[in-house]
Every structure is written in C-alpha cells, then in structure tokens.
Image (cartoon, rainbow, N blue to C red; front, side):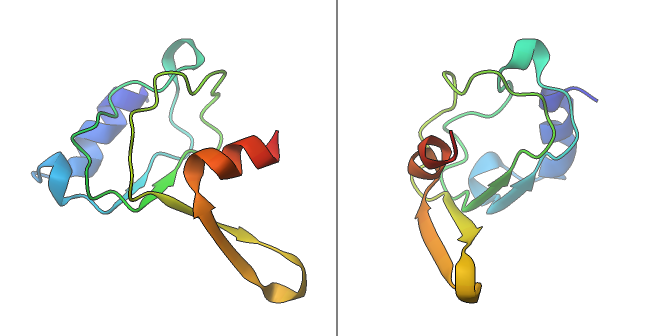
Length: 90
C-alpha cells in the first residue's frame, strides 16, 4: 500500500491536527520519499516508518512535537528530536 493512502486510512475521519500517533510501518514510500505527510500534523508526537523503503527525508515536514525513543544500554531511555536521532543512526 502506498504511503499517502495509508495516511488517509490512519486518519479515520480525524483531521491531521487531531493525530498524535501515526504508524506507517511496511507501507511503500513512492520513489523512496515521504509522501502524504504534511505540516498539518501539528500535534503528532510519535511517527513510525519501519520498513517503508525511505531513501530520503528531504521532504519530511517540520513536526516539532515528534520525539523518538531509543533503547540504550542498561534499559535507559533517551528521548531526542526525530531529526537528531536520524543523524545519529547514520
């Protein structure tokens, strides 16, 4: 399933500003890019993009509330902005 279609299904008759969690795992990123995710998701706190085939995050909109939790040694949790976590994982 294409990413923009999956986003439409995940909305479930809500507006993008009402969404706090968006799981897009295993959907297809057209041309390796994020499509359908806009800056209208102003309250989005959790975004999962596992196994979507991303090649670029250049068109990722600014989502100021999104945080990524990373498991670290000794079961500590580290919370950091999504962009920083992406750079750390490269």
